[in-house]
Each structure stands twice: as structure tokens, then as C-alpha cells.
Length: 83
Image (cartoon, rainbow, N blue to C red; front, side, top):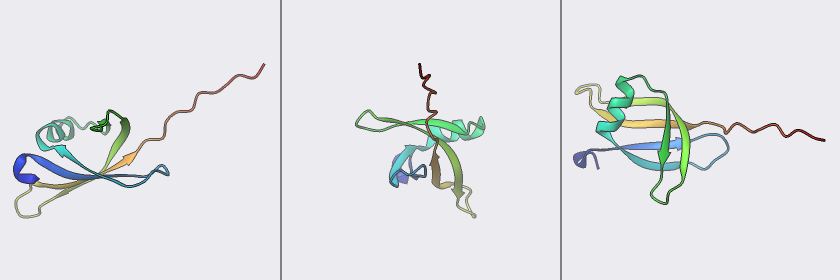
């Protein structure tokens, strides 16, 4: 996976199930360098999910990306006005 430019990652939280994914290292590094904390993850089946970067794991000797933890962002529930 890492040899093909993909980094393993995990999405958890907000009462959802844990999902193991891979993300493109080049795109992820651009977002991390820009200090972007909130991302939209798009799954192969077309679903999208808002996440934030929780933790980035690096190799302590080579400083290469090893793994990323994402935490789900709760969707904002719209207030419904009662009449």
C-alpha cells in the first residue's frame, strides 16, 4: 500500500463504526502542510463523510507517514421550527 503512494488510515467516533481506509499520501501531505484540519472523505461507493485529523503517525527514523487517525465530525442538525 505504502509503495503505491497510499497511507493507511482509520475513521472513528460519533457513534459510527470504525472504518479502515487508505488515502493518497501526496494529497494528504498537501492538506497537512496547509494545516487543514477538516476534510471530506469520499468513499468508493460515493458516500461522503466529514472528518478531522486526530493524529498523524510518522516513522521516528525516516519521518515518513505511517498512519493517520481521523475522527468523524457530527453533522449539524437543523432546528425545526414548530408552528
